[in-house]
Image (cartoon, rainbow, N blue to C red; front, side, top):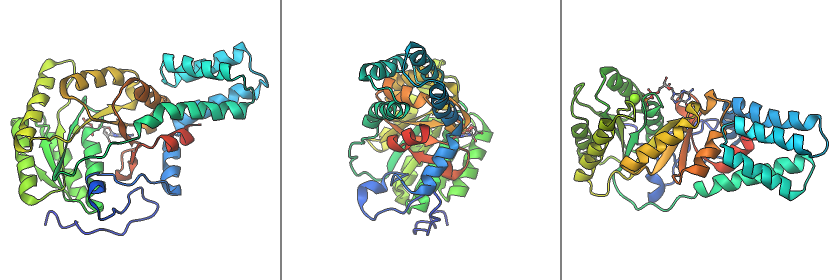
Length: 335
Ligand SMILES: Nc1nc2c(ncn2[C@@H]2O[C@H](COP(=O)(O)OP(=O)(O)O)[C@@H](O)[C@H]2O)c(=O)[nH]1
Ligand SMILES: [Mg+2]
């Protein structure tokens, strides 16, 4: 039985998954409670170790041979911030704040830097109340290889484990392998899947998936899409068509257009976001592969530049390697 896992499971406390409260709004979120448990934070810190090494390690190194702030030190700090992909403007602004503060101790500067970074990130974490709709439809978009299918698998697994009925629509029909990969994730996540044959019309798949979700009383629908190069206009046209097909079956759907960005592509992610947002109206971001880069400062760049909330971060290839983005935890893991 496909929806056989709708009962709550007892979960390992070390796991980043959490049990859901019974009430409504939270039920619509595939990754409901932002976990603050030790295991969750340890995992984040561990997976961000490459960035942490650059950031925190670089910071300590600068201060290890200097007791006082001077122009050289500020320059080194600026360089450190820029190389972590934080963005030139943001790096300059942060150094300016430090200069203006007239504080000089390494610990105080670190605290100030953390507070300033948090003030850039924090407004991004406030989420407006979502109206209750059933099913909630999430269309997942992004360039090839950014981690769309993997993120869908992780979201589906979290949601089914917390008691939601999940249905996945295989609207990336360009390669048979893409559908196979999604089937493996759906199976692992104990989610239902709606698929057509390879090369089928993706909009028709999306339409059928949402119709099936309505008929079966699913809570959450995740629509996978193709991600050939975003510079090709036809991909955007195709995605728009998928979006229209979804809203034909539920007028206010998709409730979320989630853009997946790959942290290892650096500043390139920003231009991808602009293109997808112009075409589709992106409502949320997921940043994957933060475990694979020393330039995790891209998170700060993204939050500062794009006015789209960063909702999830990917920190590995396993199911538990998707976390709800939490600005305070992130800053603590960084510095
Ligand atoms: N290290 C790491 N790898 C990831 C993460 N997310 C996805 N991947 C890998 O990135 C590759 C492409 O992912 P996939 O979901 O197929 O991308 P898609 O083309 O956008 O659907 C796969 O090998 C995934 O395992 C992540 O957060 N960390
Ligand atoms: Mg894919």
